[in-house]
Figure (cartoon, rainbow, N blue to C red):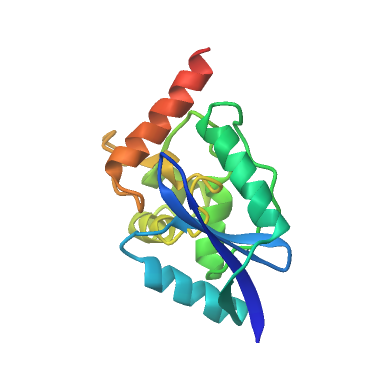
Length: 171
């Protein structure tokens, strides 16, 4: 059986579980989120691999880049990624990566971006299933009325991330 290297990474913003498979980042998620087991099970099933706690080069690079992001020194990530999901989920995750640092889009905007305007709820579900938090910026998606919507890391963290990006852009 193939292996996914995982490590836990504690930061003042949140505690993460990071995972790499085939020298690509496949997991950067909140360690204690509500859907933790569902996300982990999906990744292991689709990659036909099991989690093994051990270091990897891409995990170490991810830690460095996350620290840079949280300090305001990084506005984009340069990491090899592998996403484990359905074709629809992957289309949503690809669209998320087009949302610029410091900007937000609504779930409706995202559905329009993927040419599926009737799929707003499905877009929200795919957004919530994102296993590469921060790296694939699901925190930049808000409700059409400007409300925060949901977030795997919790709404206070989502607000804090958006404020961080706004503050960095103001300088």
